[in-house]
Image 1: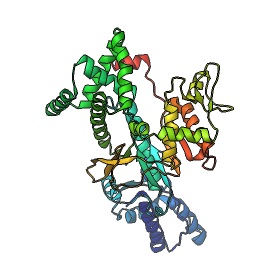
Image 2: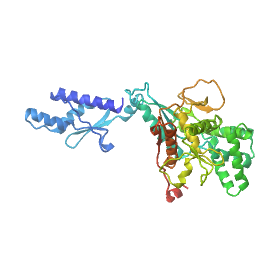
Image 3: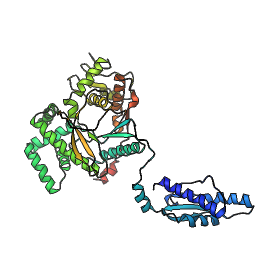
Image 4: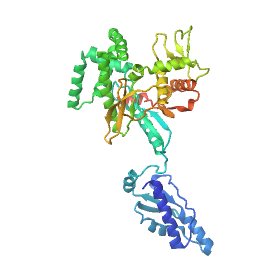
Length: 442
């Protein structure tokens, strides 16, 4: 029984008691939420109202507190009610039996009248932790906000697909690969053996990678040669189909498994893990780029500070001069920016790209729910339909507000029939520690 049903049961009992004990029909029963939990979970001022009605009918003054005592005796017969206190001259403050309430509420459908049939799909992307180390509290904050939003949408009858984007070809993964190869002198077999050893010792692989990531960051400060290796490794990872890319694949995938276990402890689950490697290898960006040039929404800059770049021009924007680079989709050296790849990915999520991933099963949760992951390898795996959403919500902090604006306007410029409202940035502010708080935390 949920709170709304308990309120309905209590209201019905109040009406019944008024009719049986006082021979009075009450059409409207006021219910209040006490300002403090120590005053109860619900409150009924019915004794005041009934006292007025009885005086009007009989001409005799009635004591609301006496009336409240009679209501109290009847309402206490309801199983969900633990206690009733009469406050002031006659308020009925209801204290629910919370253990009974919670036990019954767990079996309740949140909104049983919500119509889930034929509802347009909503895609929510959240978490999106770089798979080079374990999740920290900031990542968990993103996941909790995103998961809460997903639950609200589903409770209201919406069909929701939850995506956790995996940047498995980014510089953070490259850093950890550099550390494994050049600091620890490990090859793939060595790393696989290390992972097994860590499992036996009860040490999580993503925690080990966190320490390694910190260590390589320190090394970069004094070792320029090692820092140059990062660019080489990053290029090999993006290129794919080589021993270095295979190491990166193992490290990133292993970390993703660890991160999903962390989120599962909070009952945060996903439907799909789209990977950046597939956006590159399946040529999603090339298709998006051709569409942009075809519809003349992107231009090549001949001179100035953006000379040699492909940019998406906007007459106005909410960013500053530093944000101008976020309008650059292809740099002068030919590499695609994160914003450019995000536009291609957003087009796929909205079913506008005309291309699709291949899919593999990744893991299963304890409740049997299957998690899928993208792949560039052709296969005939039967899978749910992914992407093709009516609306996409990207859960990410306010530091990404301007790039998200570029993505939203970019997609709407290419597909004006879809409009900006199809792409929503669900933003949140950052939490910063004061110097004294950081010092106390060590």
